[in-house]
Amino acid sequence: MKQISPQGCAGHFIIRRWLLAAALLGVVGRPNCPAHLIDNPAQAGVVHYDSSIMPPAPVISNPAGVGSGGGTSRAAFLSGAFLPFADRVKTHADGAFFFVESDGMPAHRMMVGITAWQQQVPLPQAYVGANAWQFPLQPEAATNPVSAKTHFFRGAIALAVNGVPIFNPIKNDGRTDTYLAGELDEFGGHAGRADDYHYHIAPLHLQRIAGSNQPIAFALDGYPIYGLTEPDGAPAAHLDGFDGHTTPSLGYHYHASLKYPYLNGGFHGVVTERGGQVDPQPRARPVRPATKPLPGAVITDFKSTPDATGHTLDYTLGGQKAQLRYAEAGGSVRFEFTDTSGKTTTATYSGSDASPPAGDPPDRPTEAISPRPPRNPNRQPWMKVHALEMDLNRDGILTRAELLTEVNRVFDGYDQNHDGRLTADEYNGPPVRSPMGGYAKQHYKELLDETGVITRASLTREALRMFDKADSNHDGELQPNETDLPAGYKAEPPGR
Image: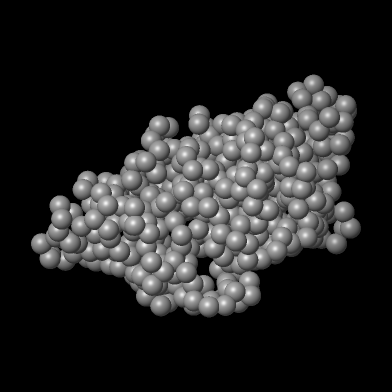
């Protein structure tokens, strides 16, 4: 295999964004070509991801506060890992979770090298606000860790430090290795059914910017994922079945590997699986119906306009050149298809014709819908009804901190043996007198983790999910206009 020369790789970076990241890191000089790009002689110059590279030398130092530190140092550690990509990734934390906002679009070219293409293309996604990525600020080891060999075939299992999600290397049929099947580009990613770009194997190329002593991603259980070696360059030895282990300096963490599972092969930490994926997690929103495979197509080039709103994807089909151009404008995306004969067709989509995202209930046919009765004013979101009861300082505003205080009080009240797990005899026992206490008793099925118990993390996750849904302006507070109840609402619904 012939290594690509640095002089031939300018197209692999959006130079402006690389220079910004380089300025953050104190790196000078022109960017080198990613060391994982190689020519595959079997495919006449088509570039593929080579996961056999060793991590490069460190370029930044490890920020204070390693993986097992307290809340403040842990948040600093997490923020530092995403810092090199701060031009497109925003982070923040509360007392329980770390949040990452991005559009899911990396600063490298995409799709080149794919030989099994389903005609999907990368489009920005709104992973912001209540739809941001999140994982526990303090990971909690699971009593019964769950393997990605048999679970989590939908959605992401990790998040790269450039804000791009990472899915299970095995696709949603439960058996196909996306890397071996030729579905991934030179950086280990591709566009999904919602035209959402994501990786399926560890993005080792990010170490060129982040440094080999930094995580390249975080699993959605909160544990970091490092490259092929430890931060000091020592081999990653004695890994468990999930490609993870515990060291004195880092605590538990995962490593990338050169073969399946490529990254975390499951979750050492506590997560909730719902509908075949980690829950909660953001949803990608398609603008057009899902597309079908195009057998024989090989993607050969991908270019973006300087403002990244227009893109050109070149491919060959049966040895003949073809092209797809698309551009975003005013909430719509215009597609222009040029086939191997040179014939061009166009189509514009705005989202109204898109298939429902995976996990969303299908729309019912309009002709089958009868007029709906007036909405019962007593049916209101639980958080909206009970927000003021959890307002500790009685100022009419419920903050996330106040909610977390209530969650912890309720959990400690039910956890009679103080083992950090609420079993049925505990949450069905004497009630904790509070709105959240009643919620835990009535909605316990929504709070159970994969082991069949309620943990502090699972209770917190559900409480914050309801809070974020009610927090319409995403400012971390429920203001009176967000908790006002409609006229006619009665505190005790009839018949209760």
